[in-house]
Length: 195
Ligand SMILES: Cc1ncc(C[n+]2csc(CCOP(=O)(O)OP(=O)(O)O)c2C)c(N)n1
Ligand SMILES: [Mg+2]
Image: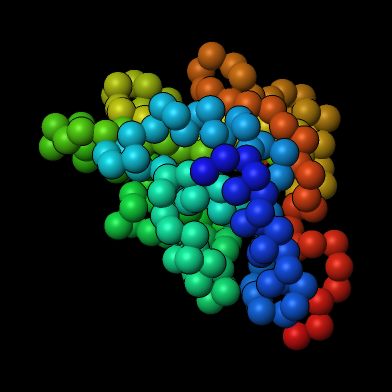
């Protein structure tokens, strides 16, 4: 999957949404294609788990979930929490919801001496919540096979993260991260759709 493939998928979802085929929240990505492609080069498709947020279409595609399966799940209203456990992909629409789930999976992998690790992808605002920080500290303290990747678009919906929190984890050594300018609205396609 290259950047054009990812963008083409989001364009297709935009069209389906506009035509009223997706009767549920849709969080499109855009502007972070190359960042994710780089990070996914490090991910073991077979053994690693990828846990993402409400904006997870790209993550699913890059992990190897067939585009048709993702499309069907989105049409069925699950864009906000796409889960494909058979491909070791989980996501949640709850801010920080994936963090403790990822810690549990990582603890299980370590205890059972299984291959692979857990990748947690979450937004910059999520990285400032208690649940993220507890999960990160516990993982570091217990040397769990887990990586936290902060996806820094600088926004929490429409609130400037740095201006409201006075800090930002993106790129700090404690958690990895990348910065990008989201080219899409937080949710939806900036148009009213009549169902
Ligand atoms: C527990 C909880 N509180 C509030 C929300 C509403 N909410 C959805 S996305 C979001 C902002 C998240 O910002 P960030 O973590 O930076 O993610 P981004 O969408 O920018 O990638 C909020 C507050 C939610 N989904 N879950
Ligand atoms: Mg954000």
